[in-house]
Length: 97
Image (tube, rainbow, N blue to C red; front, side, top):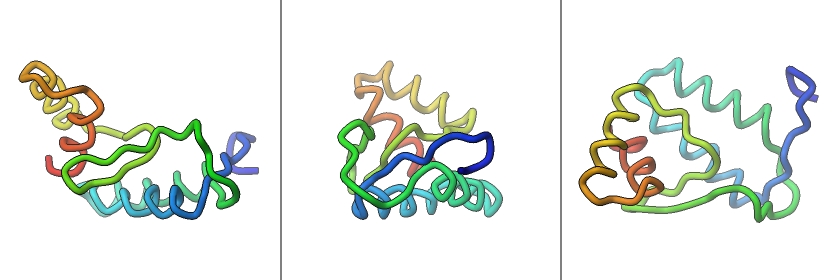
């Protein structure tokens, strides 16, 4: 079991690939490393997980809860105020801000 005794979620290979792929978006090497570690500790390849929140906007696919920085959270609030859905704003601010 991973640290903290939490059972790893089973996800499909495609879902796992998205989770690993989204680790390229954090702005610092430390944040990217932390993302990769979290994916390895929290997920394992097995069967498709219908409960994993996966979404794609503007050519970016992500799954799960996004670890947003303070500027990214501000971006989300500004974007939602401008009419974007929260889900889309999270993806776009995570990837592009």
